[in-house]
Image (cartoon, rainbow, N blue to C red):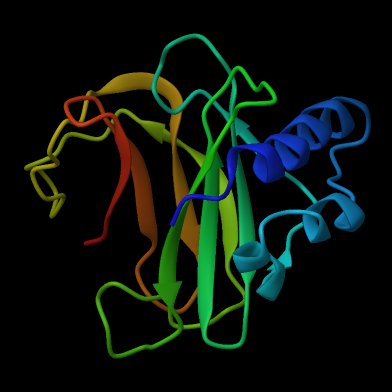
Length: 161
């Protein structure tokens, strides 16, 4: 799902300016976003990380509903034309593409791991880059879900052990 450019640009620009000052994203800005985004309870803090290693800060926000968790990602630098992509993860302990508990945390992650080693699958378009160029969803119950930038298809992907 992609949020409308205008709606998420307002959210993202507010997140950028507010995060610089206080680290918070006002809920009022989130409620002005696209209707699809309004059904989630959004974290008040944007995660700032250069996911695609282009030198620009990208932004990620975590949203929750009773049945799913979503990670909204906006590529920087942010402008009024910025768009956000949402990756959805159901809350279901029996599924590999889901989180076990909606009480998850989203944080930046170092991407120096080596796909193909230590139970890490081969990752399409992955580049091993020192520093925090990935994201991780952790619920403390199941294995974490790792998000990375696919440099071949220019999109956000995920993997899990």
